[in-house]
Length: 309
Image 1 (cartoon, one colour):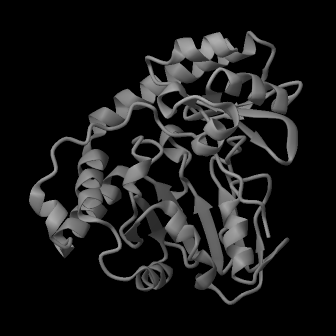
Image 2: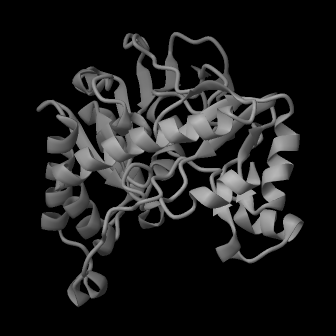
């Protein structure tokens, strides 16, 4: 079974290094630090079961935002992770190709369902852009009975999405809401692709799979193209600032998107510990002694990172 290490883990960092939650700058995740403004949510949205009109509104916004081709199906879910956990159900148990290093929940889900990880002509999962190095899969291969393309970080890398291939048999493309819109707590994600496979996922998730407030917030946010364009520009500027700040201290850029940056350092554990002592949480990886990943600081928290470095 794969080790399921993740970013976040602020409680564990506090237990080890001290401080209060408000003291910490959590850069261990790739979540936009300036979230979409949620606005007011009606009392009815909280108290009634969500109806089909609310689901249709959200899925229509998703189709428009991601330019989903007409023949592909769209399914909203309570976070991309809930979809990942059910992907192994879409094909007979066998071997799945998951090129590494990458987001470890995919391998954990398949292994937990009895699959083997290795070269396969039956099933493949790629993360595009990859987490943590932002590698792009320009030709992930669409000739397998099951091809999963996790585009959770693709909203900040325009022009590279494989969404046009979502009508192909066996293809499922994952989209995240929490990362780009900065609202990870809403727990919202999407599976887009082969209608047969999306129908299987829909059945596995059951009715009312997304909360009323999440449907409302998601539909508003995804339809707001002006906010998306301004946010992409800000994130790009901030990513460049982060590179300049960290590389000045001796790190080398290894890769990344404008939601996270991956650096090569002399000793990742040492950097991680030094930052944590200053209440800055970074991300290191069990398979590399030199990789350090940092998210983008909120506009009012740059000083804390600069002092910690």
